[in-house]
Amino acid sequence: MLQSLESLQTGQDASVRKIVVVANLTSSLVNFRFDLLREMSQRAEVIACGPERHEASEAALRDIGVKFVPFPMSRTGMNPLEDIKTLRALRRIFEEVQPDTVFAYTMKPIIYGCLAARLARVSRKYAMCTGLGYVFNAQNTGLKRRLVRMISSNLYRASLKGVDELLVYNKADEEEFRARRMIGAGTQLSIVPGSGVNLTKYAPSSPPGGPPVFLMISRLLREKGVFDFVDAARALKRDHPQARFQLLGPMDANPDSVGQREIDGWTREGVVEYLGETTDVRPYLKECSVFVLPSAYREGIPRTILEAMSTGRAVVTTNAPGCADPVIEGKTGFVVPMRSPQELSQAMARFLDDPELIRGMGQASRLQAEAVFDVRRVNTILLRKMGLLGQHEQLVQTVLK
Image (cartoon, rainbow, N blue to C red):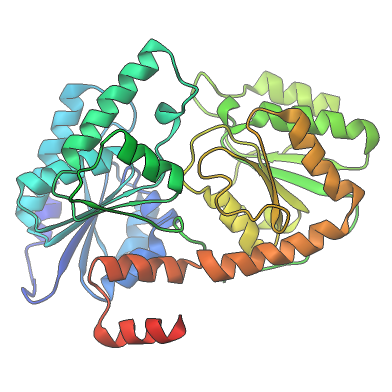
C-alpha cells in the first residue's frame, strides 16, 4: 500500500479537487459505480479504495483515470482488532492523499471511512447507505441479532457525526436512521433513486414468444425468497404446465443458503430450471417474460429490478423495504406480502391468465426506468450534492427538468 500511496503524490495540481471513494468490494467500484466514477474523474482527481486487489477492476478504473489504493477490511464479522486496522489504514490514506472530499458507501466503509475522514480532518464527507440489510429486519428478534443491531446503530451514530449528507435509497431506511437516532439533527438526509441503471447497456427488448418464462435472479439465500419462488412455481405448474420458472444466481457460504442437493431435487422434479451464475444477466433478462424477486431481505433498491425494468420486463416483488419502491402497483408489476408463496403465485398467475399484461407492463417498466432510474440522472444528483457540477451543467440540468 505504501507504494500505491507514494504514486499519488506526484504531478498533483493543487487547484484540482481531490475525492476518495471508499467501497466494501473492489469489483463493486466497476459493477455499480463505474459511470459515477467516470463522471467524477472528468471533474476531479479520483482515488478509489477497495479491500482487495482485483486486476480486471483496477484496469477498468485506470482506463477512466481513476487511481486505486487497497486497504485491509474484513467484509463480514465484527472483530474489533480487524476493524481498528481498517480505521487506521483509511486514516493513513486520507492523511497522505489529503482529499477535500470522501464519499463512502455500504456499512463498513461508511463507519470506518467517515470516522477516519473526521480524524484526518477531511473537509467534506458524504455517506451513501445502499440498504440497511438483514441486521435491521424487524423480524430479527433474537438476542444475538438485537445485540448486533444495537452495536451497528451505535457505530453509525458515531461515524455520521459531522457528515455533510447521508444518502439512502428508500423511505424505510430514512425512517430507520431517524427513529434510532443514528444521524444527528444537523446532518442532512436525502433519498436518491438507487444506484441507477445504464439504459443503453440494458436496452429494451420485446418479451419472447411461446410459454411465459418467470426469472428470479439472486444469491440463493432463503431470505431472498428462493423457497417462496419454488413453492409458487410448483403451485402454478399444476394448472399451467407449459409455464417455465428459471433461477439464476450463485450459491453462498451463508448457512441460510440453498444447497446443491435442493437445487438437484427441484431440477429432477421439473419445477424450476437452475441457470447457474453469470457476470452478465442481460441475455437471461431478454429471454424472460416476467422478472420475480420475492425477497424478505431488507434491500436498498435491488439492482436486478432496475435492470429488468430497463430491459422492459414486468416485475413481481414483495413489500420488503426497498423492493416495492421502484414498482408502480398494477402498472409496472405487482407487489405481494413477504413470505407468502400463495399470494406470490396468484400475482404470477395474472400474467398466465392475461398474457397481454406481459407486454403492457413491460413497456411501462421501461418508461419508469427512463423517467426515474436512468444512471445519468442519478449521477447528476450525486455530482450536484458534492459540488461537482459547473454552473453551465447545472443550468442545462435545470432546463432539462
